[in-house]
Image (cartoon, rainbow over all chains, first blue to last red; front, side, top):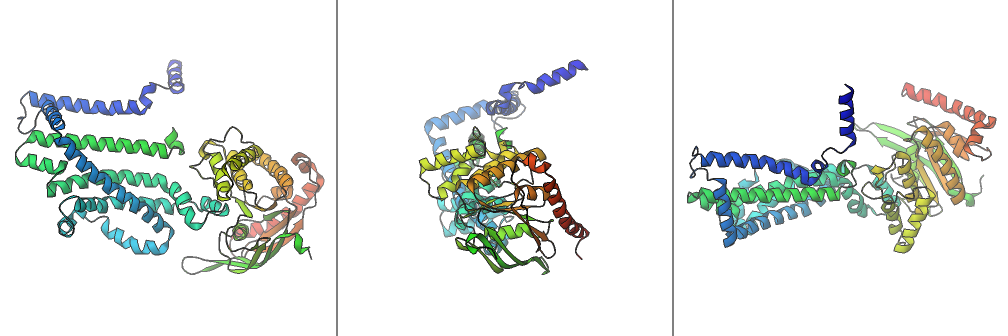
Length: 274
Length: 266
């Protein structure tokens, strides 16, 4: 009994396995899960249970990725997809954050946009694609606009909710210290709503990525989505899987980078500092 | 009649009402006229619902005046002004800024040159005994320290009038006592006019030169009392028979109202 209590105490007082509590440690564990999955995949294909035509071996996929990378094909497609997703995401944030904040502060703006959001949020935006192709082009513009109208909703809603939950006391304090009403929007309300805004952005980022890939798959042309569709048409499963892995890595890197940004921006929050 | 030139805030015939959802109108303040003198420590005392905070927010210019007028030496109150600083019960610090950044915020707004603002921030951090905590975020500080930081932020821009909305209400008893003592010292040193909202009779008697007792439903001024006690250390004041007598007297005035307020609207 005593022994157990003591053990618990030392466990609590000493940082148990300190490397585990670091970002690197967490990442290592998460990576471990994938190593196990990859091993299962490798065994399944090598043992001949699944034909390599249906499911290529991980090793082959990696070799294919290396070849594509060396020839420059992968980087061109990856770059194009990344550019569309990130630009669409940034435009969504630049429009969505101020809009959500203004909706939270001005009833008139809220009345105007609320019905649009109620209708637009649950709507499958991809249904607009044929029209966007007609209106804009089959290249970047229609795809980026598609990304914006998909990713903007979670951002607007989060910024709006964050703004409406702001206490009036910090705003009043700033006003009595000489800030104008307009200044408080950017200087006080925005940072107060930032935790929720960051959550909204974290939801919007994968949405932007998914929308980019889907539009690319539907319209073809340069970009990972288009490349995968082409590979599929030629029954090139290695090419499809190479694309899947590349997208997954890109998404993971983007999300991890964003998480780091969130920690940096919100380090004043006790739960972030811990 | 008081000497008008000594008046820091003059409140005339202020009325204020809220409209609830459903259209029912609640009169929060009725016929409030009050002169608060320069360098006076004035307490607004009353049970919850008597409109004392509403009156303070009106003086602060945070909610629009419906009827009557409020004047300071800087003129008619139409909105928040630099001559009226405020400290709230829940501190209202900017949580994403450190203590120093919080204090610098107002100084930047007041266009202090960088170097001077830094010096001034340091000076006021020292005044409220927070030296060593300049770079701490509010969430890393205790309630008492947060309120000190909020007081420093307000005092740093040197407002003529200090509005305080139950500033020590969220603090534990010991911290509150220390803060009361420090606030008195600061007020005596800086000669600010203080309007202090509280529902704590002892606190009002301990700190204030004059006490306005307000009654609820509708919020009205029921008594205006000169405290007239000799300013001593808090311990000595509490031990004075005059202090106890004064507190008892005021408590009796407030008690009936508090009881009727608890029974609900007549």
